[in-house]
Image (cartoon, rainbow, N blue to C red):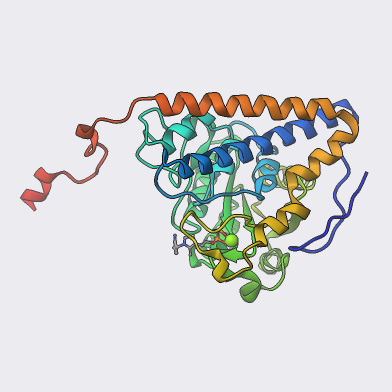
Length: 346
Ligand SMILES: Cc1ncc(C[n+]2csc(CCOP(=O)(O)OP(=O)(O)O)c2C)c(N)n1
Ligand SMILES: [Mg+2]
């Protein structure tokens, strides 16, 4: 079954048919669940901020869930992921526990970074999630280096680096692409092109969606573009590319997505796009609603059941996380690398 969607971002293309057979349907439901988890967690985070129960920065990935979930579905537990400032979806899709994510954002000791990092510094090595990074494209050299180190020690684990279109404009990205090719570092670079780097439209720098992949292809690295509203297409494309990367050559995947929310909680986005832009896009292009509509035709009850299970899971995780202990004020200086004693001797 294919369906053509109105496309406000990215080359027009038909949605990929659902995978066939029982196993295919189970996989589609798993992808649906993964996206629903990311959406529900981020909506809960928004709510907590609105109620004044959470503080700090927050960059929502609402509307971009298919990229994180589709790519991570192609990975194994031992594979590694590095992320951006907009990384809750990447973390959850790679298996970082939801309660640890909530606790981190609440600043609790049970948070995945001990409550010290907050929204832009989630990390959980047990899940292979090497971390978000508030420096644009800062996670990319981590991934290329980690993948290369892992390969030198034997084994065939790979690393995925998520970057944004703004990340593609960073010098370190181009240095890393060259080095990764030269050293055959088994990493997949996933560029989530949401059309904006804060208020800068990416087509002014690179051209229409799909151009970034073509630029990378020109360097000799294998590169593809995929419609990031279509989680089945993302998962299939990622699976093929991950197999190539695991076999020893780095690759680059551009995902056409859209940033529905403002850049962050404090961004007056009505200054550079119509006030209703996010809402309008979501009404026509929502990757979750799109998959739900296609699954409903087969198994309406299963989808509703997943929605209910995820809602309960999120409520329970958020409740436990919020009730957890706060770090004592006396711990404020632990894990800080310079010490007053050393400074006095300088
Ligand atoms: C090196 C660096 N320059 C500038 C910033 C400020 N900044 C934070 S996010 C952002 C835009 C990033 O755009 P993109 O990579 O497309 O990611 P998106 O926000 O669209 O997900 C900028 C300029 C930063 N954090 N790091
Ligand atoms: Mg962007």
